[in-house]
Amino acid sequence: MATPYRIALLAFPGIRAFDVSVITEVWGTDRTDRGAPAFDLRRVATDTTTPVPMRGGMALLPDRTLTWLPRADLIVVPGLDDHLTPAPNPVLDALRRAHARGTTIAALCGGAFTLAQAGLLDGRRAITHWNLINLLRTHHPQVTVVPDALFIEDHNIWTAAGTAAGIDLCLHLVRRSHGAEAAATIARSMVTAPFRTGTQAQFIEHPTPRADRDADTLAAVREHALRHLHEPLTVAVLAAHAGMSARSFARHFTAETGTTPLRWLLDQRIAAAQKLLERTDLPMPEVARRAGFGSEVTMRQHFASRLATSPRAYRAAFSTTPAPVSETAGNSPIAR
Image (cartoon, rainbow, N blue to C red; front, side, top):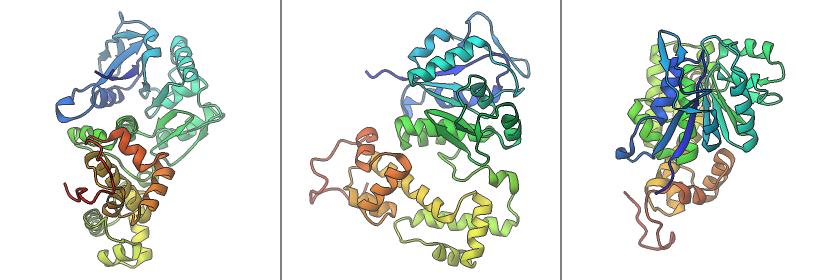
């Protein structure tokens, strides 16, 4: 039996209860009966005898000390109630050692401040909540703060923007380690999207759509596109479906979603291809056709640029079906 993926929730006074809940919901809930992988989530602190206080009268009881961190595949640092809260020196030292070992480290929201205290973000790109960007730049000028991402990675260190983006990052890390279907299973259980596209700009500049009519129209267009991914969709085609000019459609689409129509389409096609590679043994050309890439070559190029892998390698890592004898055989299935 394979060893479950090991996650360390790094706890110390001042961490946010919401982020603790997100980490626990994603990795601490047993969903193996629904096909999700098994995880081993541990609450790690300087000692296990003292509950870690959080705002609102809550407390977290650690079950492992910092000595457990070398066993972790992933370390997740929650955000902070007071973003300038100094982390205990043993915690900062443990983070430095973990990064030196090559352990993946992720920080949610203001958790970026903790990684910056440890010096792990010096000379690296990072993100935090849009309302904290200037604070992070002021107190940690060595960090290259990216203003508009939902989450980013630099040298195996992940940081995320505000509250909901922490969920996005956690699900992305599941997708990265266990595949799109595992992330989708957890997302369905949480009643949230498996992944969102776009940047923080959509929330900073336009908290709500400018016109309900446009929002409803664009939602219908996106639904139409998802049902017709296999077709050669273009901005002009989608704009015509919305009854708008291409320029107006692109402007409204970006304002609502935070990304361009073509980038959104590419994200959906990659997600569709991932699911087909995981769930079926369809030949690669058929996967490419159904996902709307047109050819296996095009699909392979986009997988390389976006996922840093090939479709075949992705299938080998995450497929839930037995590998076919030959992907070019005439009796390969074309539907599931």
